[in-house]
Every structure is written in structure tokens, then in C-alpha cells.
Image (cartoon, rainbow, N blue to C red):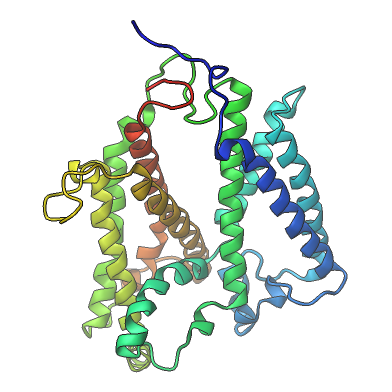
Length: 362
């Protein structure tokens, strides 16, 4: 006899119950900062207050869509969005669905989520996340990069972007939780009453191979630079970067991307579900799904947001040419890399999720 449980048999627990309130609280707090900046407070982290961007103001807008923002204009907008977000988050957490709210609330949540994770981001969030493990190893053991400390990596403007990225993820989760609540789906796993065929599974394999290939397009060019080949770079600038260790840093980042690309294959391979035999102490054990889903999702957002910035820069320069493609083309593909990796991660999560402890479906 097939056991069918309803959501009333066991109350939903976990993040779907509180994520809307978290989005509301975070929005209210950041909105308060917006009001503070609008009234002349210090620490405005965008545009004219972004010391890193203002070092080269002519490139500010190319790097960031908020590169020309001022506290007098952006501050009130941030305050208004913060107040609106606080209201929307509470309504979503309470499952408010009357009238147009059922459409407007998730639409608002997704707009804010995409805005915070992709639109307002640039390459610096990726730099913080990617170079942290590199410096953890290279700095104490090799003293590399010379003359660069942790304060240069964790600049306030970069930490602000990282916080906004996390806020965007919270808003995306709030939208997911709200959809489950108003549709009557399980709050824990998202399953509804009727099984539906999944388009994610049809796209899983192409998405994985796309997410595997694109990082190597980037890695090959960066490894070439580190080995002494100035592909697509002015010789004088190449020599300057060589003396500063710039190409070695790029090769280190490219190597991380290549390792991640190989790990991406685990989303469709058996070793991505069961630890292989050579992993002493873990071999034969089940790979926790979130061990793959969380980093893959985070990386997908980071590379997509950085890719959007590089597309703006390339367009401003007049596009990619036959001689400059090693310098300009690889990063423009990161938007595709991010999208493919996200699809692959979601398909893996959907395939690996077991029987739900709340609704019993599985």
C-alpha cells in the first residue's frame, strides 16, 4: 500500500518558514543604511564612494552599473527599496496571497534577487571568494603575492558586494518558499500532489558539459600567459604584468576554475553520488547532495555576475577582434558558464533528493 502524507500530518520546518522574515530584516537594515547615506553619513560603498572604482573613474561605469552612483540619489532609492522589501518579506513569510499579491510578491523577490546577485555585482566578489583559498596557501608558505595583504583583498567595497550577493540568495530562497506556500506544495521539498516530468533532467547532461568546457577556454589562455606567451596582450603591458606577478595570479585562478570544471562532471557521474575508492575513510559512502549543490550554485552566481561586467567592458571597447580574443573573449562566456552550472546543480539536487521527511513523497 502506497503511503501518502499531506503537509498537515507534519508541520513544515526549516528555512522555508523563516527565510521571508530574514529577507525582510536584512532589507530593513540595509534600507536604514541607505537613509543614513542620503543624509550625509559616511561609508557610501557605491559609485563616488567606492574608492577602488574612483581610482580610475573613467572606467567606473564599465566595471559597475552603479559606478556613477552618488549618495544623494542612490541613498533614498536604497531606503525606499529597503522599506518595501521589509513589507514584502513579511507578507511572503505569512503566505499572503489575496488579489495581485500572489503575482507581485514573487515578482518583486526575483527582481531583487537577480539585481543583487548579478546586476549590481562585478568581478570583485569573485576575486574575494576565489583568491581567499589561494592566499591561505600561498601567503604563509611562499609569501605570495609579495606586498599584498589581506586588507587589500577584503576591501570594504568588496565585502559590501559579497553581502549583497548573500542578500540576493536569501531573496531567491524567499521566492521559492513563497511559491511552495501559496501553491500548497511541500514547504520542505517543493513537491506537489501530482508528479510532473522535469525539464531539468533533460538539460542536465548538456549543461554539465557546457559548464565543464568554458572554464578551460579561460584556463588555457591564462596558463599560456604564465608560461611566457603574451597572447592578445601588448608586449609592454605583458612585461609589466609579469614583473608584478599578475599572470601567475591569473594562472592560479584559472587552475581553480579548471579543478571546479572537473568536479562539475560529478553532477552526472557516479563518483558525484558515491565517494570513490581512493578516498580513504569516505569510499563507498554517499556524497551529501548539498556538498555539491551549495558550492556549484554559489560559483554559478559569481561567474555569471563577473561575466556580465566583462561583456560591458568588451562592448565599450568595440568588441572582440582576432588579435585580442585571448584577453577579451573567455570572460564574456562566463554568463553562459554560470547559467549552465546553475541548471546542472539544480538538476543534480532534484535527482538526489530522497524521500521527504515532511510530506513523505519521494
